[in-house]
Image (cartoon, rainbow, N blue to C red; front, side, top):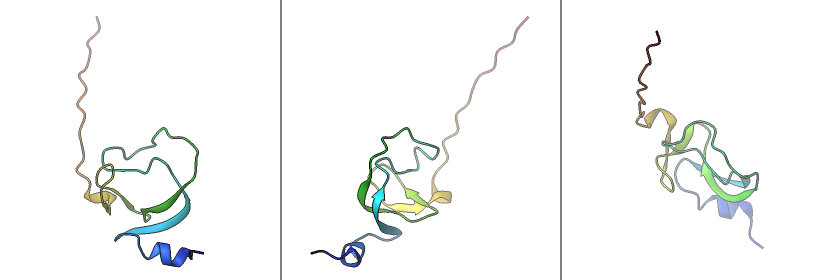
Length: 78
């Protein structure tokens, strides 16, 4: 038998153990809603206010993510 508290102790800094977390956690490259399956994933996840710095990376404050600016052109119509 494995206690949840012993598993949660193995989570990294700014992470917490969840019995039913998302299969598609937020990361600096994908801050908005991410299309994902509705399956439960058991394991360590970033705490509230934190996201992965990249896919499979470490948890950082969401404000620490480098913003990627997308520039859209504009159209002129007659």
